[in-house]
Structures are given as C-alpha cells and as structure tokens.
Length: 38
Image 1 (cartoon, helix red, strand yellow):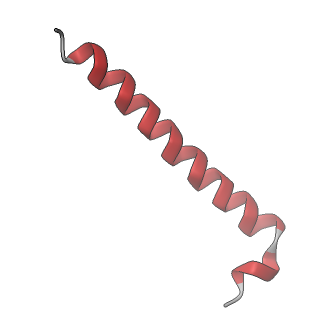
Image 2: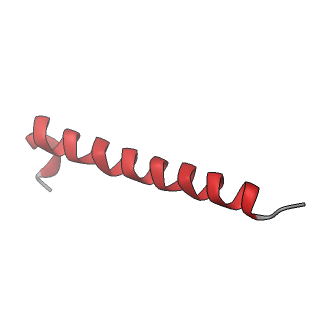
C-alpha cells in the first residue's frame, strides 16, 4: 500500500480540527468575556 495516500489526508484533517478548535476558542473569548476572567 502507498503510505502517502493515507498520511497526507489524515494530516490535513488533523490540522483542520486543530484550526477549528483554535478558531472556536477565539470566538468564545471575543464574544464571552466573562468566562475568560479567572
């Protein structure tokens, strides 16, 4: 089997998930300032 055929799509999916998590954290911090104060 060709390892590149499964490596690159899985890396792209992992990067997309991490980017969406960071984007969601940024939106939460921007629109809900009460939860960011600790």
